[in-house]
Every structure is written in C-alpha cells, then in structure tokens.
Length: 130
Image 1 (tube, rainbow, N blue to C red):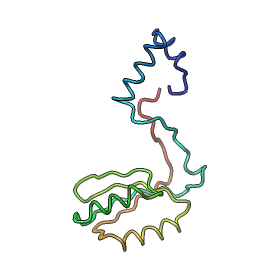
Image 2: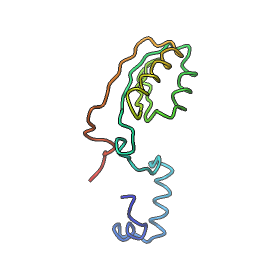
Image 3: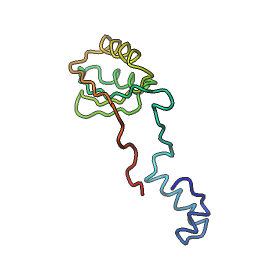
Image 4: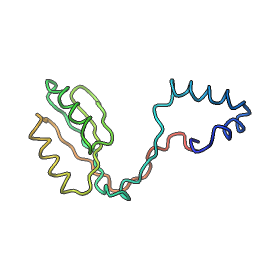
C-alpha cells in the first residue's frame, strides 16, 4: 500500500527501517514502474473514453507511433501485431473525438478503424488489490 509510511511498512513486515528502504529501492529498480493515482476520468471532465483498434501501412509505423505517443488525448497505446494498434483516447466530448479521428484518418494511411466506446467502466487498474 503506497499510502503507508516506510516506518509503518517496516513494522508490518518486522524489518528495520533501513532494510525496508533498501528493499523498496531494489523493487523500484526491478519491479516498480512508477507510482501513480488512478483518476475518475468522468469526474475530471473526460466524458468520452474510447478505444480504437486500427491498422496502418507498416511503412509509416515510426511516424505514426511518434504521433500517437505524443498526443495529449492518449491514455494507453499498444502494438497488438505488425501495423495494428489498440489505443485508448480520452476526450471531453464526442464532437472533439470526431474531429480528431477525421484528422487522424487524413494524416495516416489507415487500413482498418474500429471504435470501441466505453459506456460504463466496471474495473480498472485493480490487479493485486486486496
């Protein structure tokens, strides 16, 4: 639990504080990617959560990946096979998404374009939760 202090964790595990700090540093190098909080996107104004599965011409992969990786609307970005991607976008509303998706289609040679709109989130980022 990242909300616990190091002294609380050392007490829970029965370890001296210094040893607990050393273990955390070791885990940060090997297992911990980052510390983060999970936002309720709807409550902060991003009411349009959408996944897109698309396939592009493999010749433009680097340019496409750079564009998507640097886009402010992208929450998650996965390469699922050669030239095919799964991307989660967050937008304030559907109008902004529609405008963005048209620009995306015009900018890149997209062979497939499937939209999966999230109506209701049932579970997110909860792996290994107690």
